[in-house]
Each structure stands twice: as structure tokens, then as C-alpha cells.
View 1 (cartoon, rainbow, N blue to C red):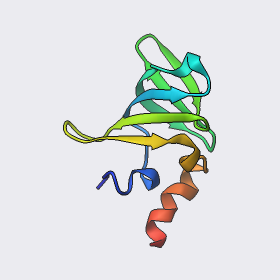
View 2 (view 1 turned 60 degrees about the horizontal axis):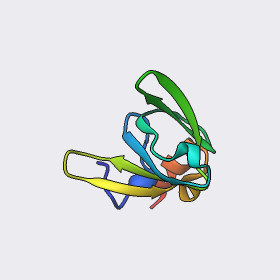
View 3 (view 1 turned 90 degrees about the vertical axis):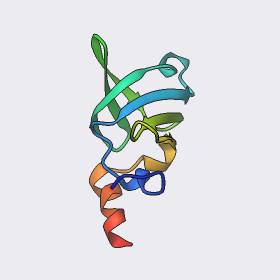
View 4 (view 1 turned 60 degrees about the vertical axis):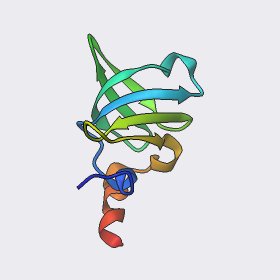
Length: 91
């Protein structure tokens, strides 16, 4: 189960996301659903378009449930998704 404690090792695709800070001011305020992930980027579906946002230099606010919201620092998850997800199983 996804929680604030394990979100950095969890599958991100399908989560609601808001870019709350970024070194690229154009990315601040992008809101939508994560539809794909690479080592360095999230692909976010927003109303009307799909945008690619660099992880490094951004803080993402993830909606985990109706009552749980967590901020995720992109630099901490700039790993290939399969490697990041597998870290959970190694603990």
C-alpha cells in the first residue's frame, strides 16, 4: 500500500500530481495525472495536453488518497522506475 513513508519507492503512474516548485518557472502549477515515467522525467496528462517535466529541480505534490497528500522532491526519485521500485523489495 502506498504511504508517505514509501512513496519514493512506489509506482507513480496513475497518481494525481501538481508541480509546486521548479527551477523552470514554466513547470510550476502543472497539474494532472502521471501517465509515464523515465529516469529523469514524468509525463503528465493535463486537461488538453500531455507534458513532460524533468524530475530534477522540481517538487511534486502527490495526491495519494482523499486525505493524504505528500510532497516529493524530484531529485530523490531521479532513478530508472524499475530500480526505484525494486528498492522497496530489498528492505
